[in-house]
Image 1 (cartoon, helix red, strand yellow):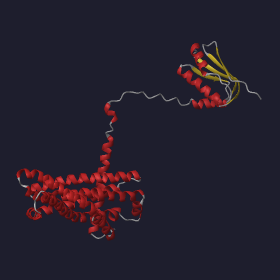
Image 2 (cartoon, rainbow, N blue to C red):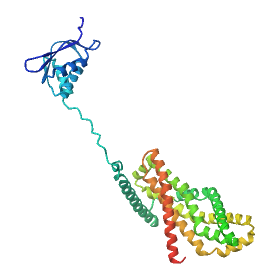
Image 3 (cartoon, helix red, strand yellow):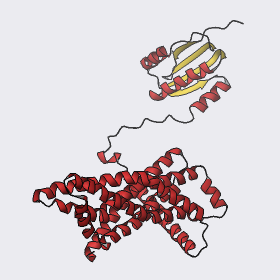
Image 4 (tube, rainbow, N blue to C red):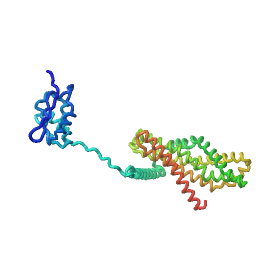
Length: 376
């Protein structure tokens, strides 16, 4: 059976309308008439209504429905009433489905004010989330510490010893390097100024007092924040990603007691020891620079011994305990509250380091002001 080419013809009627007569086979593979001609003729005729007559239609497929949808949209845009007559029932039903929902109008490009690009809710939500997580972690940590004091915590002594080794002896290399260099820098800066007054010998006082009260403990804390604090966050964050913490909770064990407490206690115990070690190396580094400026080692030692008092040493040791607690809390909180992806682990590690250093600076300033008011 041969198929005939699809055709259409636009006719006028007596009611100031138009009739679109369709004929032929509207199927794939046929040369279909161009829609531009119908659009031009309809605009030229300007009817108030148009009737699509399908009495002469042969075979048809989706090509016919697509053509009818184009006619419908054209009549809608030109405010012409669209009707159909003698169309196949299936084609008429498909057309009704296609035109049941009106097309969405394009969004108007209204210029927005400059402040519309700023999302003021995001920082507030982030602040609220951070404060809530901090309060929750502080409460859980307080309960866990009480459980430790009353000997009811699920904390293993072997874990505590392992983290002590991780936070202590494993950090000797980097602490040694930074402490010697900081002592040398401190002595060099002081000597440059004191040499103008012929008081180079007081470099020993500057190095000893500055190291014991400030530089030794602060540089040790900064190194530990970037080393151990980040390590704690990465360890706990990876456990959160692998659902190991969920398994611990399922067994009825508090993850703060089992995972966080050993890390915090280990860092709090090791920080004073690392601070003493860093103080010694800082003073040695300062002595090396002083020796290069012609100050005899025995003279440097005697002058530094007079400046080394128990009050200065206690200030640094007290700071070391506070700094160790803050570093461990920042790292463990970031790890416990980590998301469940590799990107979240990296973000938690960065947050642990940044938060830990901010805690150190604020705590150092507060302790210095407190000691100054107390005359220590």
